[in-house]
Image (cartoon, rainbow, N blue to C red; front, side, top):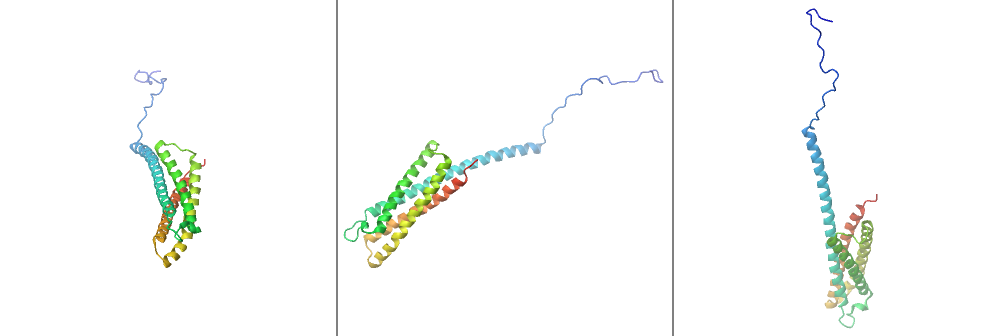
Length: 204
């Protein structure tokens, strides 16, 4: 059928052909920045966690090392506090108690310090993390209690002796008690770190 001017109507040349492909467009600049920032925060968070865990390990080792030194000094000072007659530590139950706990604390902190050195040097745990954290938490609290108990029991006896007579025996006894108290302080701080490590363990 023709129009008034004798020309046929025009039809689209490619009416049956498929539509042109859609070219993907780049995401907005704001979205790219958000994705990059989120990834950066994730990596930074992991790095911060690793640094925090390493700091906790080194702090725990330092505290146990100090506790080992103080416990060993308390043991040596009290064991050598023998000056004849009534000035022998083994004549007093309180001083024998201080010596026994100092020996026990020296052994405990020595084993714990050796375990932490092995962990830091090799990067491997001797036991499961949860088991180690629980053992550290319980052991630190028990040993700290025993140390403060022994020091508290020997302080009144030492004070009474120093009121009557101040000599090398009473000075040595006071020094041993002071070392036991410092060992208690360092182990109490170590118990706080052990509690943090225990609470940060995943139970899933």
